Amino acid sequence: MQPVAGEEKSLDGLHYVDVTPGSGAAAARLQCVYVHYTGWRANGRQFETSRGGDPVSFVLGVGTVMPGWDIGIAGMKVGGQRRLMIPARLAYGDKGKAPSIPGGASLVFDTELMAVTDAPGGRACPAWKDVR
Image (cartoon, rainbow, N blue to C red; front, top):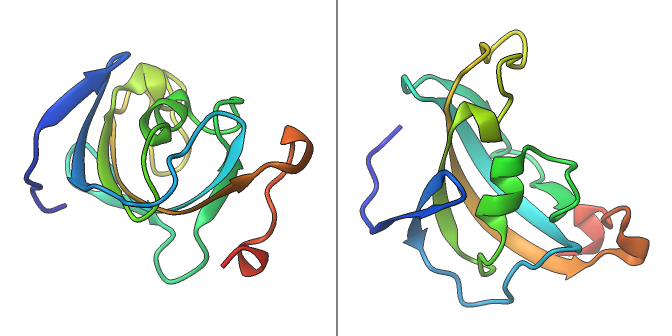
């Protein structure tokens, strides 16, 4: 995990740095967002990435992802890159996520917002191949 430059900001216990501000549409609650990411434990150990494949998609703000993602992705603009520093209570909490994330772990995600679309019926996002 490389250091990033930028002003660190806080929101609801989450810390983040806008590495590259986007110039496209802003992500808002109940929209589908498409995000490339790399996840790190606070000790710098990478545990997951979407790079090399399709970005992950989810309806923003409805709790289908960890709270830190719902908070941290909201307001990003397409093309933007943001580092999210998520405390355990906004990540996987005391339970963790076996096998790579122990309980109580704070996490860091380097994210890039690739696209924002309407969520048909607010339930599911169109496949990436249908969006790009």
